Length: 71
Length: 513
Image 1 (cartoon, rainbow over the protein chains, first blue to last red):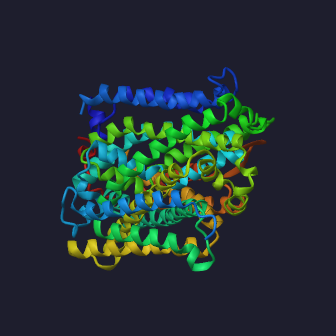
Image 2 (image 1 turned 60 degrees about the vertical axis):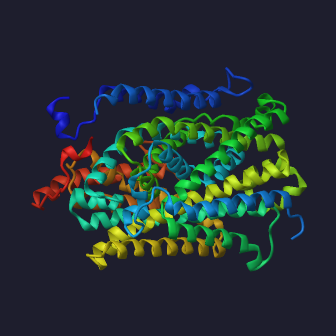
Image 3 (image 1 turned 180 degrees about the vertical axis):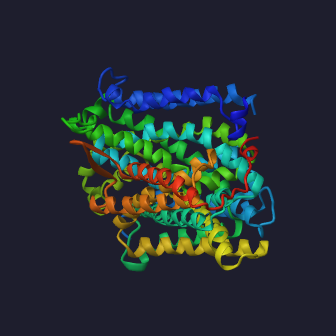
């Protein structure tokens, strides 16, 4: 941590930047607003978004463990 | 009382009896002096990772969510799934911003967002604006929980004219009010564990059993009309449904943890680590919410709205009747009792936490600030207990005497109002650059404009913003909070030049462990 981060309260880590691609993935609607490829009868629009709930949880867990030692 | 589903009603009443008992004995759980506000209203900040998980989950995923999200999928289709990117985004926000508020609140004994704003900016009027916004946005939310309860009680065939028909709701309300008064936040925390066990049991049983009954997901999605299955492609010169979907997700995610009841759940955690761990664990609820949204399609595929036995329910409660009808159609009566109890208890837990959060705000940021500046601990907690009763009584009267459409419209406005506290609260966690009077004016402009835009659109959540020949239909709350921030940014140098004193009782080191 450098002095600047301490000045603003700290707690920032470059690991947190991993959240940015997650936001892009779930907000890029034109990419996933399609029916195919479907999965066990569920259109892409639905299973893609549900899968990224799990993806988001895994990512948050990774960031939690990666930044835990900094606290 | 013809057509009462006695088996379901018996299971429902037994489970309600159990959580009533639990609500009262919870007063002794992790025992503390309930004559102190942080004990009654925050459970003494003693809840570890697991209890916080149940509490925040029980708090954020309300009975109204379980009824309204599938109802939106049932009625409007794919647009209801904005709830999924919304839930994906709330946890990074929780992970990044809210350990900071936990730390600073712990250090300075803050119980509400109003306490934090008062300490951070030293401006009681800005704190008052944040607190009043919190209370006003919460009240219709409590009323909607009771509407959720009303739907499942009616679905069990309990109905009647006048007071007799309303009696079950009044009994549930009295139970809720009594255990909240006596046990404070410990009651919903204990009951949330039972509620979540029932909700998970119901959701996952339904997600497995109903698709098998309906012949698999291919059959279910084949029954969904093509125009509901995907979002409509935007036409020329408009962002169309895509813009609506994205702005609803982003705006809702920004608003969620500003609601007083969410913050109460977070501040009751025993450490900021517990808050962070929860950010990784809470998506289990999000996944369930996504599955629940699919129930709207299950109901379409089962054709419950065309069955004569549900005609009266749909006539009265519209799409909100889709999930209760689906459960009645698909499950044996005893399991319907469990599922409806899950939704009913799912109404009581957030209603209890919301009333406690509103009571904390009134007591700390209005009563103590403007009426009795030096109460004893006992007086302070006593005021909070009474206010929690008044808030709930207000919600009950509203539900009994005002058409539920107004509660829905007010809750929608509540979302537009609560997001206006984002600059003062969330941005305030990171920087003290903003001038407090500039923030207050930004809040006023955002609130006024948002209310006017919603009224102009007949109380629907989106507004067609026209800029340079392009139409951007999107969530009014998000548009107006951007306006709010812009006003605050422009006015900050102006107020600073006028030479107002800059007060801040917090230090940068207070925000992290």
